[in-house]
Image 1: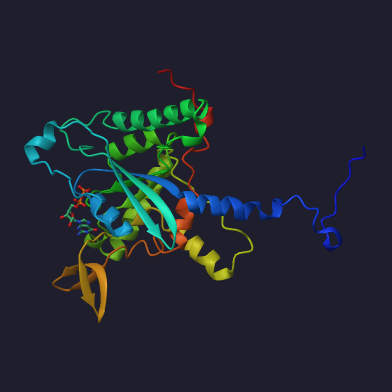
Image 2: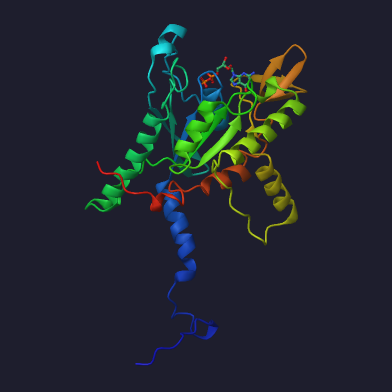
Length: 298
Ligand code: GDP
């Protein structure tokens, strides 16, 4: 038998393999099945994590949250909680899981308070790998964490020791996206100063945060510029709000101050608006370094 290339030209278009339609088929299947996305939020309590999650996904993910008082927080250990919500938009289903870490950074002694978080992430990987090599591969529940948004306080002078410790312990395990919380409490110049300081420290301590992928070279110029601006603005300055206020005749999610209104997510203009989510979809739950880590024994 000779082994040559088979023409799929117009003359014999019945004889085709059909791989040209594969992307569509895969796409259709994924759309039908829906997507799983697991997002972890970490950082001290009170930095606006739940408010931002609710503003990003226009939902109330934390209906049954119990807030602790100061005394309870001092002795509390880090917990891992999960909130799951099914979101459907234009026929596309998204199963969104938010993993929260209440108690992180709250105690008097926060040494190794990243440990339960690291253990949780490792356990999800191990479970997935076990299921993947098991018999019931088709129905695997994938709980691996795609991304961890790490909230940095706007009230310090850059990173705190706890931030450095957390990010260094976790950067091999999960894609970390650092954000500067409650950016409306700083002036634009202060935001810039804080961002520069944080970038310097991330570099200095050898923290490997998530690197957004290069955009395709055939994208139009405007998209490329937006993409560049997005990358240069890391750590994103974020503002969350769950209140709808009226600004110049428009109803927006924002924070109302005596001097005016700050629109929510002002420092994060592209997230949640098509472009940004494309970037988040690009996050794989398995950071490139994962494979090189020794497999933990359980
Ligand atoms: P969490 O403990 O990190 O989940 O923080 P919360 O989302 O519960 O927010 C704590 C407090 O900060 C609440 O009173 C929020 O209204 C307020 N808050 C949340 N996000 C922002 C923000 O971006 N700017 C300001 N100024 N306050 C915020």
